[in-house]
Image (cartoon, rainbow, N blue to C red; front, side, top):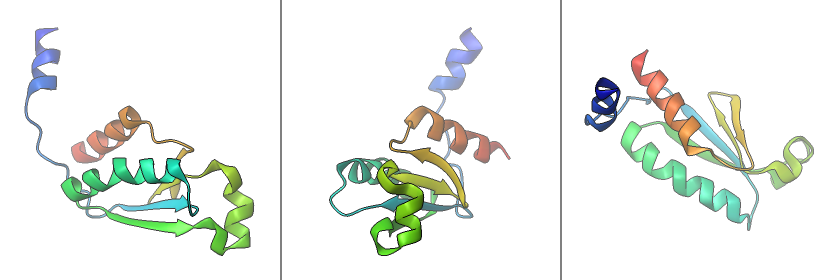
Length: 100
């Protein structure tokens, strides 16, 4: 138990995620989308991944695909979150990538 606590308290170096491409599918005026960007932007600054937004209302195909599920967050093309980012799960993805 002490070892686990020590791991949690140890300062971690930032994982280099410059190879990640994170896409956030949004729509104009979406408060949840702004919240998602507020979670992702500091992580982008720390870990160096590419971050882009795509307004689904510019494409009938995207609007049909994601509709009311925005924000949708895809990492390297794989959808990881819909509607809300779960910070603990995102931390796990970052941590796992940092170990590889």
